[in-house]
Image 1 (tube, one colour):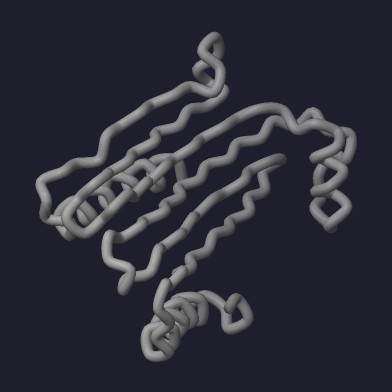
Image 2 (cartoon, helix red, strand yellow):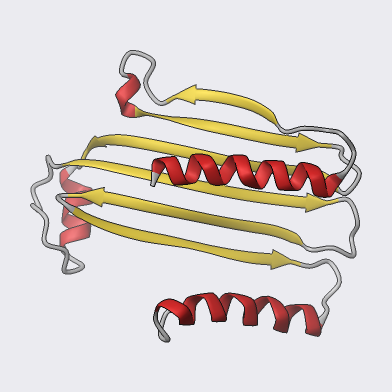
Length: 160
């Protein structure tokens, strides 16, 4: 999944740069969760500002690893997950998120994310996408929801 979100970030940034058409590119800021322990995780923040179409856009990846605290383990196990409620299990999580603010108020702001959490040989996925329009358009809203419903229905009809 880590390779997937890293490749997805690059692909989305390349496509947005082409769509924007200004010649501006996404800046890159790489960070480590713990400089003394590179295995603890990292992030890659990418931002494009003042483009022709995009006022400001961010496409970010974070990957973290650690040991599950008792509080988090109890929270997860209380929801029927078969993990040690005392904590202590190693975990890994990865996510890619994006927020795109267009210059035109006629275009909506887009927010989206995809993520995974792994512990004790189990894996949970999540994510979402939403538009925040300044000017509401019923037809766009219906098309947006139909697009995501179709994708969810391909996997399970109760996911949407």
